[in-house]
Image (tube, rainbow, N blue to C red):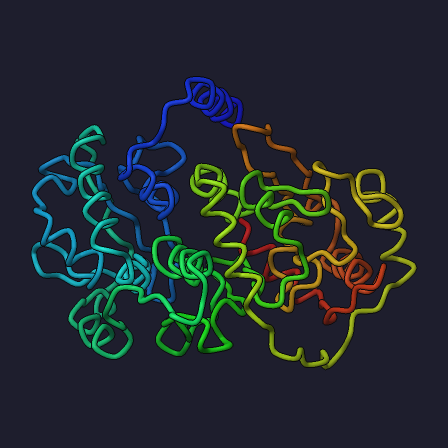
Amino acid sequence: MRNLMIFATLMATAGSAVALSEGEYVAKSADCAACHTSPQGKDLTGGVRFATPLGDIYSTNITPDIQHGIGGYNFDAFNKAMREGIAKDGHALYPAMPYTSYVKMSDKDMRALYDYLMKEVEPQPVANRDNDISWPMSVRWPLHVWNSIFLENGEYKPQADQSAEWNRGAYLVQAAGHCGACHTPRGWAQQEKAVDQQNVAFLSGGELDGWSAPSLRGLKISQPELVTLLKTGRNTRDAVSGPMGEVITNSTQFMTDADLNSMAVYLLSLKAEVPQKPAKTAVATPAGQQTFMRYCSTCHGVNGDGKALAIPALAGNLTVNSENPQTLLRVILYGGQTPVTAEHMSNTMPGYGWTLTDQQAAELTNTLRASWGNQAAEVTPGDVAKARKAGK
């Protein structure tokens, strides 16, 4: 029902041909809704839970409500929160808020975003939920030290040796889009290990809240197919589900074709490191093949070639071959949905965690990761148990 309501709203918006204001476009590009709108809550009133090593953090109300939201913020205070992670009263924000990326946003975009939130968003008197972090981990002063070590100041600076399209894509990916928040591995202090393409760790894959985000380096996809994927959540061979599906529903589907092409140009320019051969490569087994034929082949095909614009191919699939198998395992166990966009209703894949043991799910996963030219690391029943626990 929720997907149907979203689809109806998107269709109505598309049919009305109402252009987004400059500030709303920035808000869509920055995907503010993903973190600040909970499934049961009103727009931008917060309450979205983020599991961290310290405990659970809940996003805040960013409507212009004076008491509970950001209505009391002038532009300077808003700009400081967005770029430095410092709230109006001086307390440090947790870097679950991607200010380490937003610091690169242009003054023009930051001002437009502020004007949108203050003038176009309806104030909502919704109280913020307290974070579930016990003392002394809830003490915030160490975050100022964290900022002094890991926060790199300054707006994005175009590279003179690159095209305007490449630079626009780099800006969108690194700044407002904050793609590195999910797709870049994190270090000992939960900092992103890199913030731009100068370091090969940037966008080389990460894990967040029990989901694995694949590497975006060395993508084997054409520019038009990547643009289509970002716009609709599917193309002739691929389909998106999980947290990235929400990004497409809330953010990238609203972006212009020019901006999506710029992002594709930038992403496709990122070279991957020479992959290390897995210590132990997945092997297809008769038991895994039998499970595949029983539960998967009807939709994905006996050769794993899927169905164009509807069901993703498993051969050469980025998620199937990911070094970290957690997203693949969660989809197998709990199912998945493609994004809801103005062009497509969501397709749903059922989960099979209710009937597959950890051993059976591991055998199926290894068969997927060893068939049709796929060559990925072996998955163990322990990996399945981890994914099962994360999905509960």
